[in-house]
Length: 504
Image (cartoon, rainbow, N blue to C red; front, side):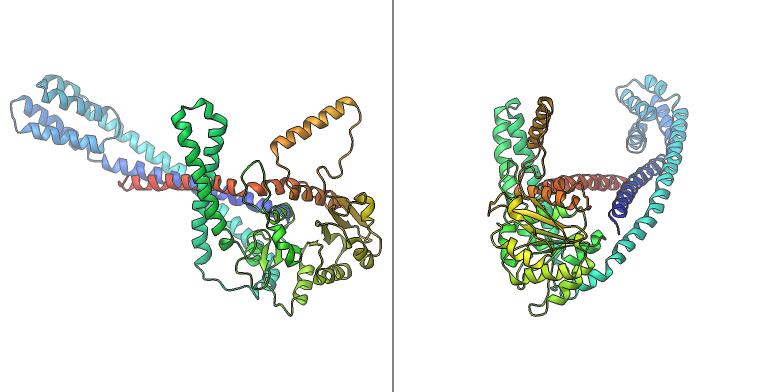
């Protein structure tokens, strides 16, 4: 499945979900209209009985007083808000206060009012039924392309799923659902706490002191509880590589690195905003512009690292599977290091894969990397020229179809050009100031920008990579907002359903 087809599939799915939700809401409304009509079906007989009871009460029959009260209670429980209910209620009050003549005048046109209200209820039922049909038919029709696209998404990655799923560690079926539910509580607390603290900081001067004092500690407590819950539940509810592939449908990005680099990649950068997401999660977010990011997990690790979805290989026979995954992946991102296994993977990618599939990340200094690469590549990479001799600099390396290297340094503004003219420089400064105010630049954000420029230099373009890396730092916040919204909409449906059955 291509990125465009995947985007179309997600759009169709969202439209289908919204249409189904609206259809369900309208169906409940139609059911409530039908129930209101059925409850009011006996209104003509009840109106006649109430009028007769008033007449007998006016003639001095004391026992008719209870019948008047019973009739008023029936209209209060069964009549829709309207003239008949108001007339019966007012007439009952007048009768109890001895103004029987006035009460009889109030209900003189009760039969006609009941007839009009029944006709209105019939119109409401017909209208709501027609509206439900107009939404239910598209909802049913949209389910067909949704299911077809789902089948195509899963069938397109069936071969890759078979490769990565052969040695997946077995987990109890209940483990991921349980931790997803627990994690949803963490997302809700995290989002509520973040919003409360932000409101206290930005709008606190407009609040009363008691509200500000209450909002800030409660927000911090909710934020801290959410962070603790998410740190425990997210690794335990993380998708494996097979699940990530089935959920996405595109060919994967294969992320290769030395296991010794996992601790560095798991680091969470300090930012102006609270974040839970590691550098590898940000990198996976940026590379998500191409497809799901998968990586070989460290053998024997109790929990997978967050970021690239893990699959596991035997310690003594991993090379054939890695070669097969290189072939099936649309992009190979390799983080250079000291491991001999990594250099074997560079050599195999150079020998067996198209040049534009390979992206090399030199993120931990360049000492010894340039010479080792020059031994494997047909053309020198000239890292020293790009990084101005700084041995601790980082760079992204891509290759054109002839294996000519394109090296892009990782920096605050990779590939930036100096604007000419005073006005142009002022505009550039204003843009950078606005961008700095909106975005906190993490190290991985700079890496994503360098990757974007490096890939564009060899004809591979994905405009959203840097933004995806930034938004990956806010995933927990957005998930919390989505979860609260979804729970609110679902709760509204539940309340309406309870009202339909007379339980709310």
